[in-house]
Image 1: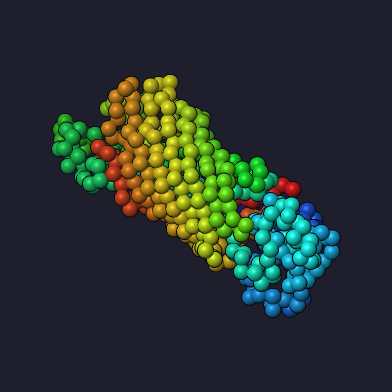
Image 2 (image 1 turned 30 degrees about the vertical axis):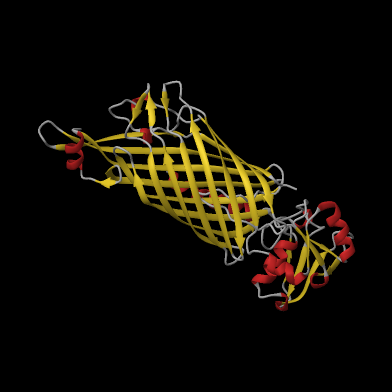
Length: 441
């Protein structure tokens, strides 16, 4: 079966599993099982008598805000952290931003009286809020996850995310530097009889994220790649023909470790450092690496370890999240004496979260990729600079199995691209992902 069916199959299997999960009570918003979060769970009763439960204060506040406020409910109850008894949400004192994250982020913990809240803050930190202040402090989503720009928001300890998806990229514009040229112009300018014409890449991707602590998280990504390159060849007779070359296989494993240096009590501002390692699980083929037919885009792996790091920042303005990234990845020479160029990146993302199920956004990133080297010779038609604009979106369509199922996608195009000596400009890159998020108690 083709790889294009992978996402459809995964969706069907996960939804079928969710249908078999039984009647175990789960959070209205995030799907986490209520019996695991008895100390923080909340109960809301609508005017039509419908009763919903959430795992904690943050999701209760999101639910109430989304329905227009407390007036849309006949009762809203939370659990007092100190005694465990149910109390009216409007009468509680809340603590946000402590060093305990019992359910969701931001961690909003309810107390029956102010003294208990002050005693808790003396030990665990945080800031006090009334019910009305807490409603204003909560965003529709606890965090958003960018596509091409990393988020500085750490996952809580035990929080995990697994995603399976599909990527397709097409490159079909011949360029010399930043200028578009025809095959005839390319032949005349370079004296070469072979010119790149089109390259297509598709991939089935697997991604995973895990919160090691409330400040430290690990992300892993790997893909199975299919690549096709079509070149135009001018024959001695003056006629033109095409040559097609293909390569496929597992790509390199990408690992990213994020450590949150600072955040505010309201979980609305974050500064995080990132360490990045790529492991050579993909294949490097010298057939695509000689000075005449250098085709670095056809490789499925670098054949070497890449090491890098970066600085990440995230900030929330009401229903909007903004993320920023500065990063650098240094590639080493592999055993075949080939070295891919280092990658410097700067990017920012703006995401809009109208409710707790939907995110829409734009992401802008600039990359500078150094030229490759083979046997000490610089590969002139490699590396380059690009500025890419990407439209992104996500939809949380199901809460089940103790977690969330989310569909996400992106569509990106370069605003500017310089391919150094010659090469192909990216026409578009699209992704589609199915994600499942679950927190281990």
